[in-house]
Amino acid sequence: MGIAFELAKRITAMNYDQLPAEAVKWAKISLVDTIACALAAADEEGPRIAESVLSFGRSGGSSLIWGTQRRTVPLDAAAINGTTAHALDYDDCNNALAGHPSAALLPAAIALGEELQASGRDVILAYITGFEAQSKVAHAVHLHHYEKGWHPTSTIGIFGATAACATLFKMDAEQTATALSIACSLSSGIKANFGTMTKPLHAGECSRNGMYAALLARKGFTACPEAFEHKQGFFEVYNGEGNYDAAKVLATWCDPYEVLAPGVGLKQYPCCGSTHSAVDAMISLRQKHDLRPEQVAKIESITHDRALAHTNRPFPCSTLDAKFSVQYCVVRALMHGDVTFEHFEGDSYNDPEVQKLLKITEARPHDYQPKGMYEHFQGQVIVTTKDGRKLSEWVDQPLRGPKNSAPPDRLESKFRDCAAKALVPGSIQKLYDVLQSVDTVKDIREVTKLLSDSVK
Image 1 (tube, rainbow, N blue to C red):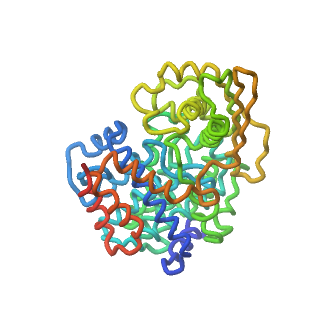
Image 2 (cartoon, helix red, strand yellow; image 1 turned 135 degrees about the vertical axis):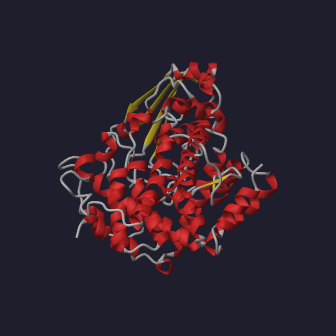
Image 3 (cartoon, rainbow, N blue to C red; image 1 turned 120 degrees about the horizontal axis):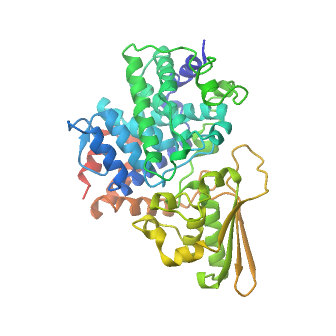
């Protein structure tokens, strides 16, 4: 049997009752965080353009468009909500995927869950299964896949969305294998589009296409059983000969659960995760030395060259571009002791003080060699002051979990800050509580109805 079928057998064998409590806990945290990020982006131009195009000539359906009271068909809801969840680049990330796992698969799982009247437990199982599936494919192709220019959130995340939807449909192994093979042809997303509206569109499209692949397979659509390993299949076409290890897809399964190791990284700043270690380092320097912009003569941001490939943007030319500029993010951290929504709104990147500080900021790669393949998030900031001091701070891992998780009150405050942009104030606590206990909900529509009723 081909890789798709062997992977499908593992997907279809998943059972909620076998899930460890810690995996369920992190699945719920991710659900809370993903919806929060989507609520914060409810008025962003990109997702609203996508919605207007997808809804052209029709309206209504079973699935909620998050942050609104509008509904549409599940496929379109997955596309719109995935785009919205990733629009601010504030959503969670994962080292194995080298991308954003939840925005790729949760919108599909929830939209389809509404149509199927799935329980909260059903959605959690679908999420953990999808997370596991996409991570296994990622292990086989990284890091060559990432460095070549593919955007794994989309190119690999689609397999998570496919697995999640197959789980909700309770498809058998043969159908699920076909869905995965279809997904091999629907996979896309290039890093050239980072810093534009198209990057979050990647998350929306892979969420939609994962559901689409499952729907097609369920109806009897056909695909090559060896779509992964064929000489013109996913591995050869996307990575090329000698640049992947197909055996890693099947080497382990839930041992440990990928949602726990390497786990979910919850962002503390609404910008590219590759900037976060440098941001943390600058915030630490500011606090330790009571550092202020007027004292600074030079800033050096030093991160892995893998991160610099898409974050070395000395003078960003738009707010989306600024999210991927390590120079800009470090400057804002110096100025404010934080990096927040407001720093990526309007023409904030053109602020005169920001432009002045960008001129004395340089970014370069560090010489540190990570011990593990995916451990490349170290960062250092060196500040030279006008009175001749050299201040340095090194960060091994930015503040995100499970290994280096932010305190619970910080995660809750992130939800409140995000939700406040779209929901009436009195509804935020109730929604947070319901999301925290989503595993007790008998019908996921209870959650989305509350979400809809809470919109301003």
